[in-house]
Length: 437
Length: 78
Ligand code: SF4
Ligand code: SF4
Image (cartoon, rainbow over all chains, first blue to last red):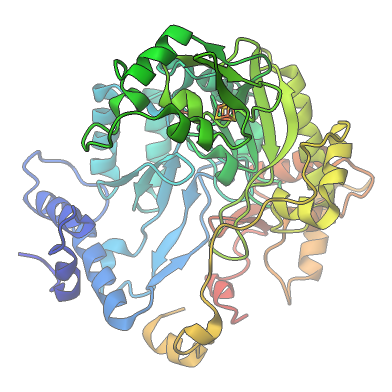
């Protein structure tokens, strides 16, 4: 029997998609039965009370969580996000419901015994609920009490050889695409670089002293599978300097229909015969491709490495051989006050161990941001305030035409206050009737 | 130079009526001749020694004296 009636949440289960409500109910039920005899270290009705407080929030149209406070385990300034319920008598199981962020393995490769171990720790010492993975990439463990934090940290570091991730004004957990481990388009070893820089910048990851958060992401090529260009203050995107490799026989096989475009990815529907002019040449953003005497030609000087032609004809076209990466800066994707894409800072740099040249760029950017950045000002905002030219200067680069005049624009459209019933204002006295301090 | 611990604690106590949590920048400003990264070492040492504690909203981290300030600050009531 469920502890709380949840008619509003129950509706969410009726749609065609998997439901988080059904998942939480399942876990609540499992904890009630406890067939594995787990010695629960936090209230066993945590999931029941989570459903209860969520239902109350739906009824009231407001949250009953209080954020902020605890930040981590001893010596760490991040990795834990304190969360408390403002109706603890009604929902004692979630009086404390802290989130822990755990550093995901590079490329998110797991062995099943690792996942089992993680789940066992979390069943016993937390709510059993996880979010795989958070927006930054971490393994997110949802809901535990203060006394469990050190215990979990001990087990993660000593038995699982992993660590907490970043939160607050820290370097956040770096994230990498799976890169060279599986992908022929990787222009550098993204996982290795993510690992090496994570180790190098442990202090920045765990001891907050930045004006605000700072994210690194590593994409092996401009396909940007971890969306570094949109989501990281500093994006490392693989690229090449020489020419795209062309196998003219394979080009002919695509044109003749023997090879399926896009690796057969669109085979679920008949799109008609492959048309290289319409599907590749006309879509090249810099119009630098053409057919001459039955052969495909590319003016590589104009190519922006958008990846489109390579994605469509992977057997015929290959990334170049003189490989490295571009560094873009200033992206952010916040809910308030303007998402922004990254702007090109370093057009090409070699990505070879020990990455000294890259570390120089990183550290000169940090020195500038730490000195000049206002509290809660992201790097992208500082670049807007002081200009990209200043940013180029602190890194010691020469401006080139690829350095655009201003950061690229916000891709989101927001509600205006007059569009929302009641506007943004709230009555604090009315709020306190339902929420304790 | 005076003990950094005294400088920081004195500063925080002098502001105690209006503020209980401080940004890193506010504290680093107490050591103007120092590079940011050196100031960071000093301030983090004070945390390790238990003189200061971290406070985080999840997105931003602040520093305070242990026990100072309440969560209600987040609702703009104090
Ligand atoms: S970003 Fe590029 S290299 Fe990395 S996995 Fe995606 S396609 Fe492959
Ligand atoms: S990668 Fe993009 S820009 Fe370059 S040739 Fe292919 S389609 Fe054109």
